[in-house]
View (spheres, helix red, strand yellow):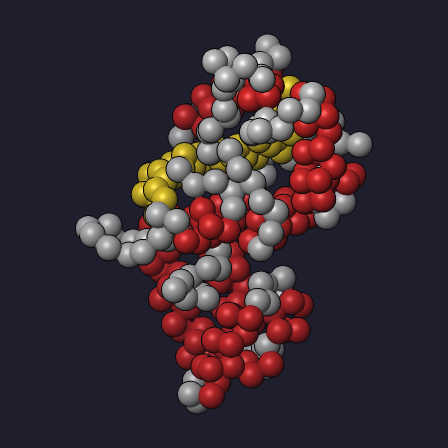
Length: 264
């Protein structure tokens, strides 16, 4: 099981450390304090903080432990590229990181552009939190260029292409966002809706571009893929390949290969 502190992004760990150093968190009852500091206030983290206090651990000692965690995180962040794993720790990998944490860090750091593509998305748990984070960033920085590319598949549905797209928008995508007004441009590959299986294609790319950072991963944007499944990704912290991926999708959009989902 992933430790609650390991599930926090670097920025979140820094905020938690600051709150602990200032001694403004009531560890046995930390939920409201975490919320005030813009930190996740899930049951796992609250239980850990309460348990720390029960074991006579102080806020300052926990802040020192977090400082050690941050030091290790920053060593990894200085690398040009890194392997990002999800699933059980085993083998020769030096670290097994929750990919959800890496994605959240990329989203938090994005200032100019953010591209997220996935085959499957399910807006529950951490995925809903990510979408809320993006919506908040767009409100604070309207110039942030955010784009999504999703797979809208036919499956066994015999309805028209238009009906399937409309149903996806109403039942999945519109409901995923905190506010319908904040939904960024979202695209799909219409070939996935072809009723002829011989011509049908599936959009299966799973990647994140955040400014000059690039994550290419096997994991979909869902709780299972990020927290339970065995998945592997490669994170390039600053790379020209981020430009190449962004421009490739921009070309697909410009050529009409990818079509825009229009919320209604």
